[in-house]
Image (tube, rainbow, N blue to C red; front, side, top):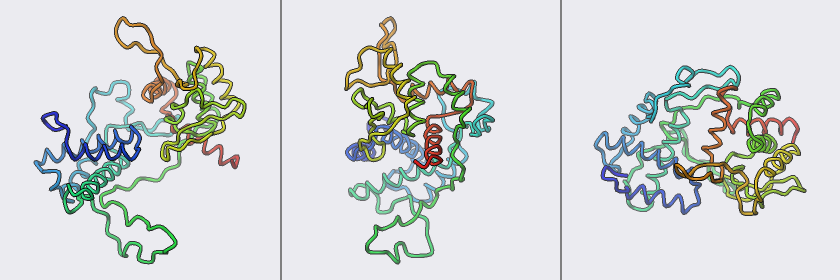
Length: 311
């Protein structure tokens, strides 16, 4: 939105293009916030979007490296631990700064936006997000039987420190499992640990996506949007059955995971599909006792177990 609460035409057109290309809602939302941050920077420097240059982007990246994220509310419980290493998980607690991955994502979004406007004839002649120079010509010795490789990384992308994926050992996974307060949450945890599916893929399960006899669940892959049947452990199927026995009949088109919410004050409780934010709230409550685990740690743990078992 502009200062007059009017949609900004080039951004609206770009986001509509992403939707038409079947980008997920979460991806489109993250791109929109990255462009909002860039637009505020342009407004601060009184620069029109189609007159931005690499120097302005360089200064933007330098600012991101030292800036603090805006927050609606000040930290309370996590104020003393922000930026420190958790002794249980070995992971760093989130702080209020912009990390290298966020800056790289911001650069990629801005470059993609300007590439789109240049292709459609509405943008500048030069993309302000330039690629880093290299000593050789890109694809100078290209094999005609292979695809062209990307010509280089973005110039102002900060390096990302290499680190080992943080995984749960058997004791830690048992502790997390024991701290969960419902069969629903135990079923989600067991499925994630058994096949390594993403949180969004597990949350998208419908009644028709469970093959009880074959011990499979059908997910929609995040990147390709393809359907895929994934195996799950016998333990996860038991917890899933215990959870579904607590509910009324689940139709083939019903969401498997439900939560109970009030739509307004004084209204009755209603069942609603479990959202990603609601699942994050489960882990926030869990982490007050056990550390700073996330659903992505379950994915890493499952991958490590599969590699050890040579699956």
